Length: 81
Image 1 (cartoon, rainbow, N blue to C red):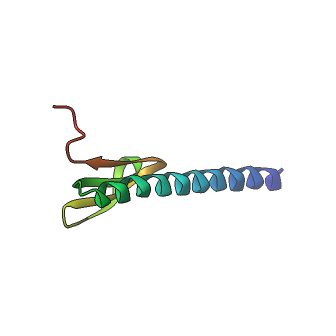
Image 2 (cartoon, one colour):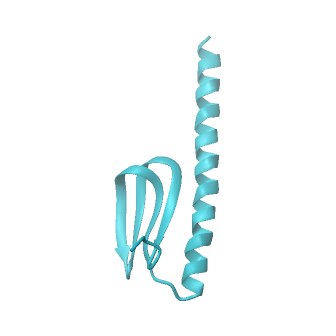
């Protein structure tokens, strides 16, 4: 019984880690593309929810957020208005 629960937990953790890695590489693609064509990147974040860690280098703030199931790159000029 305990072995089965541990197996399910390990599987769930593996899925979250794999999905998080895919999202990270996807968002890095957006970031690199924006930088290569000369756009300003205000924020690069992995995850959603509360900020766990962050730092600012140059014009970009890098963030690691609580829920690792998504990500975003906030590029100058992409906001409405």
